[in-house]
Image (cartoon, rainbow, N blue to C red):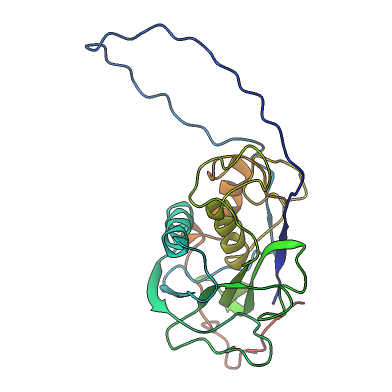
Length: 262
């Protein structure tokens, strides 16, 4: 299992406000909407391997939400983040309901995913419920586990089998997908969920440091909208890359040893 943390920024960040006066538009005027371009460097992305391990886009991904320790409104933000992932990748997600499972659960907590569930999202207290959150330094951790799969042409690739996301229950982040507060902890719960689920579908932190990307390693004050680099990476792990089989068409015996990274 490869997991990636998102650092939390404790220092207050000051945002300068710029007010621009606009001429009033007559009520009868028609103003065409300007095309919205994704922000930042389109090369600011990274995947967890070459070729990029990814989910099979020709099968649904069942996901569940663990309500224990989750803040009010958390499920709505989980579903909102999943919708944004699905729209950018073409992957099909199906909500299977709630669960008591905790990704990489510690002793005394449920580690088992229910049937038809490949992704679990849970809030945990550092050092208590999950091995993925050993201290209070991180806002969250997420990642996938994959095995060998094969494309329609027989090319070997990484086939993600399951993923998990754990979020720090000690942090009081703003809900939703807006810019978040001007001072204190930066970012929003929506931004954090998009980032960690991004890890769970195969994206890593980009080497190019571009704060406009959701997959940037530190939460910052910005709207939770995919940047240009994010979208490049999401396409590489998305439906446009085609279906993945568990076995090569021409192979008599296929190794199914799972590749799990610390």
